[in-house]
Length: 130
Image 1 (cartoon, rainbow, N blue to C red):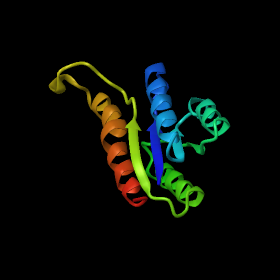
Image 2 (image 1 turned 180 degrees about the vertical axis):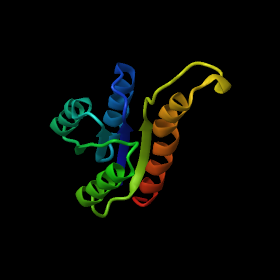
Image 3 (image 1 turned 135 degrees about the vertical axis):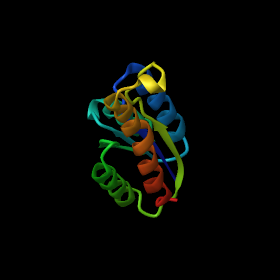
Image 4 (image 1 turned 60 degrees about the vertical axis):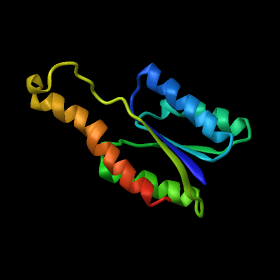
């Protein structure tokens, strides 16, 4: 089995949450970390691998279906024969604090791309690893 951690945000909070979850899962499972910016996963991958675990990092834009398909193809190649044990979706899309009817189309779409569309795409691809 393997654990998959998806992280898009570059906020310190999301990176720390993603790191904690990845290190915990890496005690039992190999881990695949996905983030748009490799700097957000490189030190975590190194830490896990140095401690005797197995981790890979893949630069991915979770709001792009083709980027996600490429990432999942790489995961399947790297962890051939392993089943997915857990997928953690820790994405910090654009958050706007205002009543729904006051949102502009751009504000709505920005949040939907990361938190709606990307989550559903990730889930559908993750189920193929089960």
